[in-house]
Length: 440
Image 1 (spheres, rainbow, N blue to C red):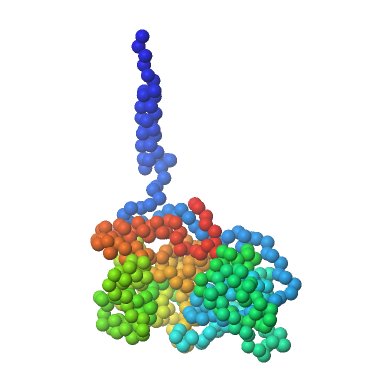
Image 2: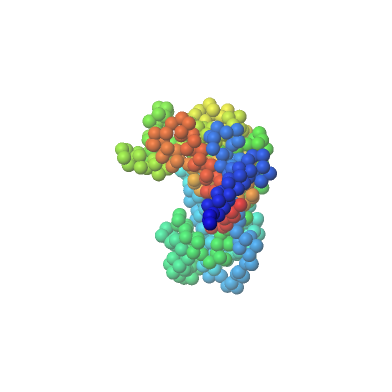
């Protein structure tokens, strides 16, 4: 009697059928075929915006559609947020301050924007933002007043040092007693907050202040609209950071810069000397060194951003080595080249930064060479408005690949893959404090 094992025959048949099905499904002519998620060629005709997104960040429903916790009938006192630095740093301080004030059941006094000679700045909160709109939008989240009661209006607030306060209990244990004692205090929130530890009603107030309640004054918004209208469409807003003070602060060396740039950096250094030797290499590999305009242009080409692209340069005064960008991308526009008139000439740092911010949140696409306060705010507002063509160029990836000795096609491929993955995963496009991850 002959015994025939059917198991091997069955296995071979299944494998053969699986192979045939795989070929059919993966064939570009098949109706079931789906294009691969990731393009592989750095110089592909399709640009980085054509990469399929896997993750997007959207405003959390608990903030936008959640039921507000009723404000207590009695306030514990008044808090003024004192904001320092550039516009977007002050905006960050204000957002944090609103969350803290709600946490402590305080009434918010209009914030104070500190005059800063370093930023060529003298404009206050009301010079940049619509005060009445802010108060209206914060209704139900926190009480905001323009003026203090007569019994404390003549007093200066008692200043509370919050430089080491991070989370909910820090403020309740260390700041609330001062608020209850003095009834009117001023604070400047610490740079690194633990907002994830706030109760939801305090986080909701912070999110509302940051992304729904801040609107430019009518006059400033009119000027910003004029600027937006003047830019040829479609356009990319590029936030490029390569000013002397920025490079000096980074403590990085750039031996190939012009003598004019080197002198400007040296004048801005002060006591902050550049790193040297192995420490300098480690520092650069960690992504601490700003990209030059020339390096920026190189990466934009890797991402298949056409050299004919209209680019709005969202940047302050004093950019160095800008020819490294404009020699490759020739359609570059700035606010000073598109606007004229005495009103623009009289603008200071905050109001000029507000123009860049407005244009950037309304641009067709946004790319930043840094991940600073403006970039975080712009990316989040673009996500809030459903605009996802936002990308941060990776200084760390550029440094690592060049230190590995990658050149030419190898370097281009490596940079493409790094940025392709960042865009697909939505990295940096919004902060998790007020936005929730949605997998597509």
